[in-house]
Image (cartoon, rainbow, N blue to C red; front, side, top):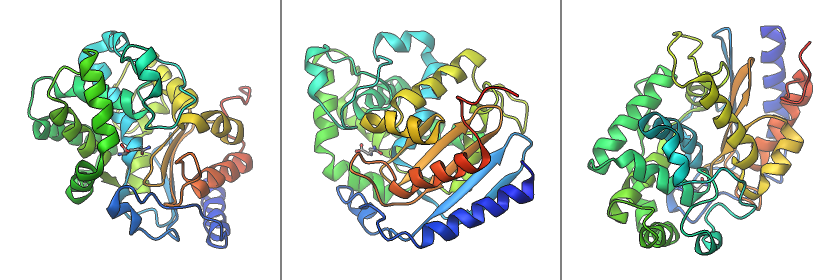
Length: 313
Ligand code: GLN
């Protein structure tokens, strides 16, 4: 795929998306997200050779929300290794992202690290006895280093709004505390969780931050090993099977790549060996995944023939 071809395709996708009228609904249960225009659309593709192609609103920071769970999982694996899987499963839940139902019959062990319950346990691991702000400082530095961009920030207004309205997340944390799967004061664990969800990145920054997952865990820019090859593959496997909650099957079916969505309308998708792709469109489908983001990734992967199910040439 020539660079100019790829840029042309991204520009065409932006143009096509501009004319779509059914754009889904922005998440309004987190008040600041309700104010974002559903007309926004950005896409960025960071390729293995170090280039980054951008189109539309790709330079505008947005709330990455649950896309942050890819980075918190990576950091937690670094902190505690495979012991993490004693506290979190690796199965798709088939349930909405914020569901509590399985926790009762499964003794407070969340199905996977990408549903809210699982990500709250990951946050509890990352907290490691520290103040939530200190733990967030470390996670922010990690994401900044992955994207090679220290302007990435936490939107504290979004974090405060989540804290004020996040009763369901509080229920999940308290319920898991009762099962002994949250080790800290649930308020502290939630403070870290809400801050990580409030990370603000542009598509360009997000695509760059995902590059280590293209190359079996090595940052292709610096040669720095972020995670072992085995872990990078497992993170991609979890993105494919669990990254879009009860819409994960449909995303794999339509896009053919591992992907992680967030209710801010962002999606990070990985074409192993080829590219890290970030797309942003705030309107969501009924499962809480970006409607146009999914559509645009479907268009892109069909046009450039990227799929993990594509046999090697
Ligand atoms: N912060 C959001 C929540 O906990 C994240 C959900 C999401 O992006 N799917 O509800």
